Image (cartoon, rainbow, N blue to C red):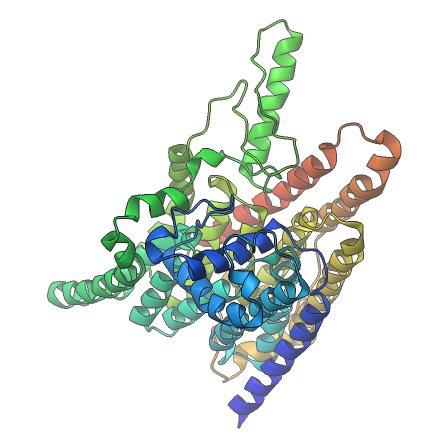
Length: 522
């Protein structure tokens, strides 16, 4: 009975979100909309052997095969709705109401996977915690901005990640590994967490002696190989594997996206620019790059003037090094209740130090951390700050005036709901009652969580100052810069947003790292 009521309540959460998303259908969408429309046409019109080699449009297919199969599946329905949607030539830049409504609705429907994932992860939690996580995930403003305005399919991909994590938390490692392998064949950028998955499954699933462990390792390996064979087998058969890999890993795009994701490389770029200006003032001959980091248009990044050039291998090594404390922890003590936190940390490392990272990739760790946020007062404080920073860093995706009130209201409403939810969770000794509750839950008992007992939710002074700084940055970027400087230095607003949000993400990474390095509780 309780389970049925819980499912019904979750459906209400989804219905409210769906209604809002339906109202946003006529709003702005990015070039990603045409990217996915073209992929519908490409997979519908051409044989599989040409999917990764066709260049009818500049928007070539660069996702793994399962996503291509997903587009092929959607194209069946698209052809019934409007045949021009899936026409390879006549469909280029097609933007009628039918294609807009069709593609928008497919994103909304695909969010059912996210709904199932969050249900699996929260079904055994205390009702208050469960509903708070639903608010943070199902009503995530970042997902609304990226998927339902800008246009992408992150919701159902993150749903698969949550499903995988839910199986791991339940101790069903084989299913967890299987779902994660499927996810990698939908979007390979989720592979950043693969080292954590590998070490955790090796130590947790493949234990129990040499014979039993080897048998389980063989079983897990067979499952993963079967998934990848199903995805890539047809392309290997057609001799297209090299072309598939070339499309999936276009390292020539450069270190950074044109709008710098708020990560470590923002500071590296700024340091390089500062040094080049300073050295020129001193009379040194510094070569000026042919391209510019500050163009604001999607394009390749420029080479550095002073600092060493960064290669994909450099970023790969940095990501692995930053992951190492988490991997060591998973190797020494593989605990199911910790896996969600470890995976979120892995995606934070990938976001900070990865190659050609997009700002949208912050969803990969913000959504899993929503599940962690209810575990302790410290987690709640951390998530409150991180979620606001992550959402604000996405504002440049919606640059048209008519969308400005929407993104501001989404962030304000989210902040208010977070504040009310965390206050209700941790005020008036609620944490004590929930800690002693006999309801099945996934609560992590740590020294940090004990600070929640008898202490109300609040934001510390430094965090308040930082959040006020976000407001200052937005006022300057949106209002004062055009008024004071006019058309001069058009790159400054985006640069300020990237730089300031980078501080918040770096703070989150350090906070997560400190948490991981804590000694286990007695």
